[in-house]
Length: 626
Image (cartoon, rainbow, N blue to C red):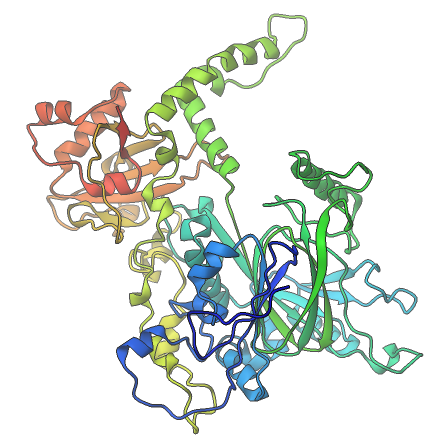
């Protein structure tokens, strides 16, 4: 192995970078050797403030990923290691207080000072999971884990405390929304979009939002005296067996010490995790096994032994050397989906894990294809009917429909298929979720002063602002509005068409040799077509009432017929005073089932204005090559 190298982007840190490409070691270890001592505040230049990492991990920070990975930059991480290698940021300082101070803000502000009883009471989970320790005869890592689910937090805490049962639950909603939203945006998973499941917030996709995630808390305990080993009297340590996850995982060690052992898996981008270490029903094993083997059938394994591939830990499903790391308070750790790992509690404590997941390309495309098919031919909308030997032969009908499928897909591709499925609004993080929404985070960069016992914690006002749900905050309705019309189909994000400004770096300027095309997955509805069928009470909400008498509202839905609930991947309400005639012309074209171009539009409407940018951004229009 080459000797440790100094990281070129930081003169005050040493990066111990182990080259893993040749040795296939699964983990890159980065050593942060800051001494962790308290320093007085001092005046710093703007350049210093910009480049310096936060001394304390703050979930609401606009640079959270950089803060977690320091001294490695997020740019380097995403380019070289994300979804490839595990990365461990080790911060075992000479001054142990420096380690704990890195996570003090999270613990005190969001986790009640690591008070387990309060964590159980405020968890996002419906139940708290308690692991049952194996009997003395089965203390090795191969012993299957058992757990019980407790719905009552008081009972869960009593069992956790009295029986020394390690616990698992999700973090409180405020912390989960901040961490998941921030890391989805930083990594680009799901296009940076996130619909918080426990928040009253409106997003462009709702249940079809591409990005998802959750924050898990793993709470270990000291063993009771009755569970001491007869050999040496030491307390038994909680130990999992080998398993894999299908999520991308970011772990922060809040307290205690844990030892991880990892090895590379043969399946990249797994659809589901494999948990051979966990006691489970036969149906669960079958589900995991068939999904795991589906991935292996694509040629990811070279094993000749077909009895265990895809599920059990071993040479069939893992490769390269095993590697062990130890996490201390303040350490941050990323490991990709599909990587085999097992975990041992060295010292009791709490670790936090952010699990990120999202929609696959296969799911996204298949939903769009179903939308395209049911809208293009009535034969695809027909219910499957078969009477073998009679007139109804389902196989013949399906073969007839499939024979025309290449033509349908080719036409869709020629009309901008990929950009119709993934408009810019799904590729850029939600508008309104930038650093401007997180005022006060820059002050946290300053070194804690000697008299600051909580690591420069935010004021009450800062906490209240930073705990807002992650979502389209500026565009979402108020609580009063939501309480009145949360079930009304006319509520949603309102886009001012006449003054729309897209994200930095995006443009809808016409490229050379292109024509204007309408997205076949998109449709418009005039708001009045809905309100005329509603009672007077339901027509008083802001989403329905126009901001001025001369304005008009339209609902845009994109890609909605591929799921049973007909939820749109994009749904916004467009309001305009300027583009009403143009929008009505688009509606007339939709009613006729025809396409259009700019020349025809300008001829019929005598308008010289270009189409509004928001129609390109949210996926109604696109430029396609001639």
